[in-house]
Image 1 (spheres, rainbow, N blue to C red):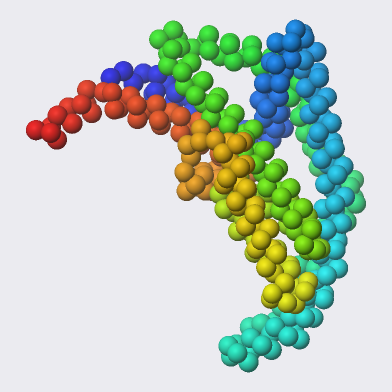
Image 2 (image 1 turned 90 degrees about the horizontal axis):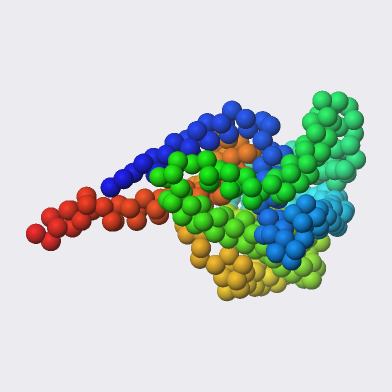
Length: 357
């Protein structure tokens, strides 16, 4: 069994991991740019097939992506800021109700001492930070204006992202071809096969999972807004964003929405519409969104997804969280290839012969 291409690929993975660890403080704009270029490349290829020059096709894709991102920012930031401000204003009322009703009930029914149930300091701290978050844009601008280095860093990243995206998107096909041609001839066949499978898996994950996150966030936000939850849009958006980890978005969103609805109405029976909204979201995710937008091409077990996110964060911080699932998906391709090679090896066949004997 020839293992050369596999060990060569593993060596590249180890080297890239070491390089990412060293360069992680400056990688964020380049990773975001590469992600946007990867997402936009199929559309640019399609425009090229319609006889548009590559540069013009990239400009069209770039403008479309810019309009989408700008529209999302202009739409979501005011909504989320208003939701956070409303939550900050409601915190004192929640605290008063807990002190007057819930804590005495817990003391009488469970015999818990009042000194263990003093929420004043905690709620005061949360209220302070939420009030600061309610004016997030003004607070951020004030912070940046006081720190020239931070301001320059933010501006540099904001400028670098579109520049990196444009040039990577323009030269994407040439870069991929150059990398393929640079590999040793005896590796090219196996590498091309692994690259095609990895591209299919990454495309399914990035485009599909981002679509699922957007769809779930929309369902949760609109559903919670329709049932009258005052901070429903905020909870729905957050639940959608973190739904790339299996069941995390559903669990966090459900707990937060149940608590918010209960504190808003002080009625246990009023929380059942929240259960309906998240139940509908889970049914749509399982029966419609995931099969339609992602399919079964990724091949990552939910436990593997959770481990990948936690391991990426532990090893590389925020950059590791961004890279965790794409890297895990590519590693899954290599592991499946290794398994196929192993099943076709003389070692495996000899073991089967020994077992049958």
